[in-house]
Amino acid sequence: TGQVAGLFPMGGRGPPSMVEAASSAAFGGICNVIAGQPFDTIKVRLQTVSKSNAFSGPFDCFFSTVRNEGVLALYKGTSGAFVSIMTENVVLLTANTGIKRILRGFHKDGSPLTVTETAFCGGCAGFFSATAITPAEVIKCRLQVSRSRRRPSDVLKTDPPRYKGPVDCLVRTVRAEGVGGLFRGLSSVLARDLPFNFVFLGSYEAATSGMVALRGKDAKKSALSSIEILTAGGLAGTLGWAVIFPIDVIKSRLQTTHSRSPTMIGMAREILAREGAGAFYKGCSAALLRAFPANAGLFFGYEMAQRHIFGRKH
Image (cartoon, rainbow, N blue to C red):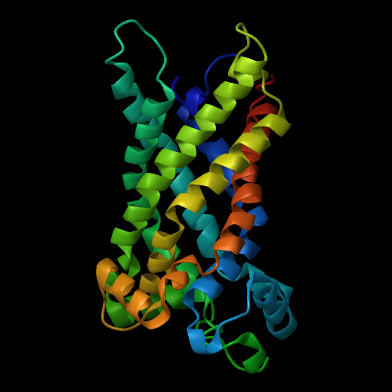
């Protein structure tokens, strides 16, 4: 488990066990969801509305949603998001640790992994996490758009949502589309998460390494403050989302459609033909606004769990 410390800055009595690392990652996932879910709901709604009933922007979507459905509507799909984020973090952390251990075996001199190697491990680990989270992502996206097929201002408060909740959504999806319906858009999730984790973990490692370097040659990553961790995580998340956002639009469309399963390329062509290239950046501002606090929360939650639950102090 020594490689885990390379992903999340640690201090204290040595590297954490896998149980500690996984538990801390789950706690970080909770902070990630709480901080980022409202932005994610706005992002998905902007991505999945058509031109004829489009919002004028993220603020219009936000205020229209709150005015017509209430503040809690911003947390639609939260249960699915909790499952998705926690699963993603635990699986990603476990796979990343194993891959980094294998790669370290090629370093006969015991030298640490480079930033590029760390990014490569993150990208490979993304394959496992993407496969694991796809069912929860499908449920989350469908719940988030269950009343947004039309502009919320056109929807009466008494109009029933498409689903009663995550369990109802799960049952109805499997009944109508089979188990395969829960993996709708898997190819787009893989296409999104592999490059995202490469950029995300690589840029995080680069940011923290730069911060450590500014402290002097004898400084260690465990000396970084919470503010520095928040900053590094937020910047890494923002950069990662900026790179992969068009793929995320395709993913959201694939997972919320109830028609015959289209391919990723087919959906991309359909979006381009009907709505133009600009449609691939629908909800981008909401996603980037979400990326900083959500990913900063991920690292902050991990660190707070390590310090206050497992007693690992800087």
